[in-house]
Image 1 (cartoon, rainbow, N blue to C red):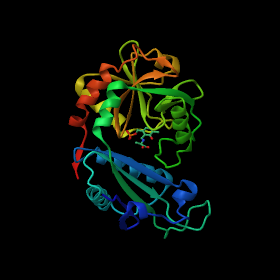
Image 2: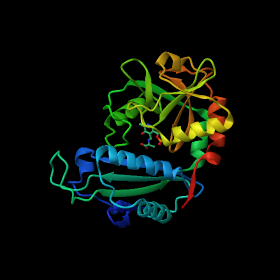
Image 3: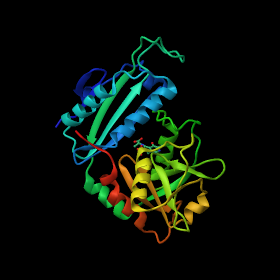
Image 4: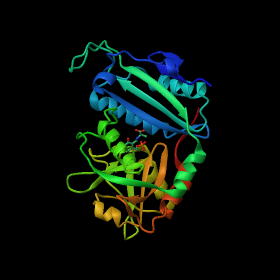
Length: 287
Ligand code: PDD
């Protein structure tokens, strides 16, 4: 079955989809994006993703190319055309197409919108959750505003590649103070020695993950307290559990970091409990 994408007003075959060579997303990484999980025919936490998109656009002063209702219509149509039941939808908004010049183009230049979607096999994910993953730590050398979800992900790309070459599946960024920030494309959580669920406060040094926010809701419903504080690599290595969260990664256990086992080297109960309750709590929007 052919895949389809939406690019600037048109639904096109994915293989034929293209943007201008002067699109500022391509030339400068001058663009923001969102990824939403699709689970059993529902878009997960759509309102929160679109609220964060509005914030990202506002922070870098890109004018949205259309209303929220029109955008949701396009997300649905791309998902339908690709027959996605379980998977993800990706959207990217750039500052548009203009002759290369660092300063913003004139206000008449309209923002570009790209939407793609793909199916993901839930069985493959289930195996990953059962086994857990390995991670490596890397210095966090990103810019100071990673709370804005921009497509400028070069550090994240290099970090994930470094992880892969070390036989691991995620990189864990560590700031100059030796404190953990987040994963290459995920937020990071520990269950500390005292049994407290801990994650870094959502300052400018991490992306305020939508999954992170919903995990807090789920934890609240389950009576699990969450502490937002910074923690060191040493504390993470000595934790009872470590897990990561992202739009297609709902509490994925990290069982070894830098070659060292976390606790007994097996996935922990807290991650599983929260994952089991997650979709009952998350907002679900029918495609
Ligand atoms: N990544 N931190 C970073 C650096 C991320 O790139 C992501 C998401 C997250 C988790 O955010 P959320 O729960 O809202 O997905 C945290 C997406 C999925 C990606 O780039 O593919």
